Image 1: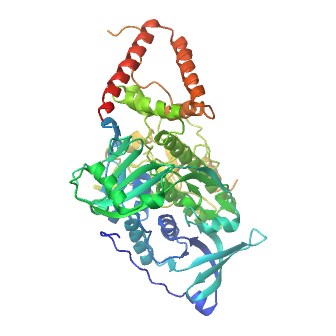
Image 2: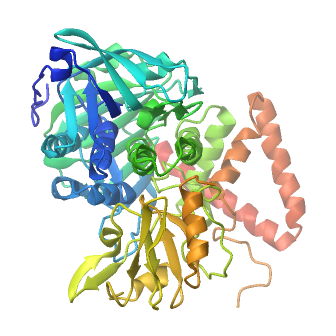
Image 3: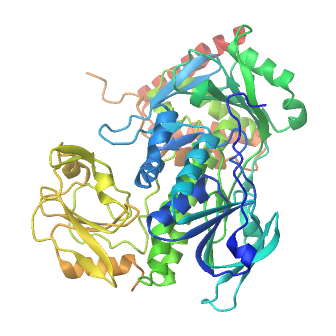
Length: 539
Length: 77
């Protein structure tokens, strides 16, 4: 049915491992080559880990799925060197409009702080994203991407040292693989999750939604438009997003009693879109599906030597663009920990912090997305009245606008309580506390403009706000290398000082995922060593 | 100069999403009738908290005018 896109068919190849029956123990096997599995493969490979990715299919994601990617996610893809084609192809936006009935209730601007390398948000169809990630994986010598490889069984040994044994089915039959670590990125219906017997509890929402992707030359501005109870779709909500190649994504809320088979019929969908766009609108249907959603999370993101990331670990409502974004941030959190554990520099207890930090983030996402869902689909007459009262007041009353919730867009959740953090001892006015992700800022090196996050790279860094006397600190072979403002780079617009709220001589210990582990007003090697040990779960 | 006690019309609720969640949760498992009663009581409880007759009068006028203005519009459809 799709007119603007034809699905690539990736080639199945029998592995030597299966052909010769000579398997070895793989450090990391990733199950699922969606956006999360592919991102994790690239992050592991960037850290020197050889990874195998198994996928039961041989193409990219079918249809209209993830759309919006937020700044933090783009920063991670930038660290992995894959962001340029995504920015080139994606659609940038920052204004959202909320309509109630036939009037504008209010509008918001994501108001990205100026002087960050990445934009606040881009929209891009998931299949384009996956194509780019697949291409990057295919080019990377450390990534072994295996199509038509279906995981059919998984066994963990009795001892914590034992490898995981995987049974994998290909067109050539079934064979066994062994892995130190398995990461399940196999989506909301994760087979891997069933194989380890994990609970996946939460709230299933009854309302059905229709997704229609349409191709049209439209003069809507590039903005997120959300309607509550519009004249063209009474009593329900509608969301409109622009994607790449003049494809527009429309989500129609259908209510609990809608018949999904009936609602998918093209004549029915076309009538809904004509009601919305007017009888003369020229458009072609690109994709139609009907979905229901759930908000739930796995009990533990770590089950022994099996870890869960993305929708396999947590599922959210689509309002707020939190699914793919939080999944990519799972990868960011996990890859450096796998590297440290596989390299023997950290105990496997470091991977327990993957659960605590990312379950905390997942719970934050679930709370936010459940709240949005309750506002968008009120469950009782009184809830509906309150919701409509908020929307009516929002037209004229500023106080009501923060209560309007058509989806709170994804921002990274800080790990404020993480055991990896060393709490502040010194006084800081503002800046970024331990557990916060690093803010970007423009810099220059030898007169050439650049960006702070690119200087931080993939390793532990001691970001020194001027001063001298900072030295490299190492623990168990893990080095934290000084990056000194005024020596290694210039704070060309004074924004590092501003965003890090720091005085000359202050030091930030930055984790390999570009989160703040600890900070001090002055260099103190012993304190930094202790913080680095803590951040590697060595104490 | 604005009167000493004017109706607050700019955002004043800390963590608005958290507040709204509590407001909706307060009606969980109530019948429609009970929920109406809850909201009516909530108006009176909050009015007592405000106390100031001038502020309450402004609030009543705002709620009324906003409702009349909004219901004029969609009823045409």
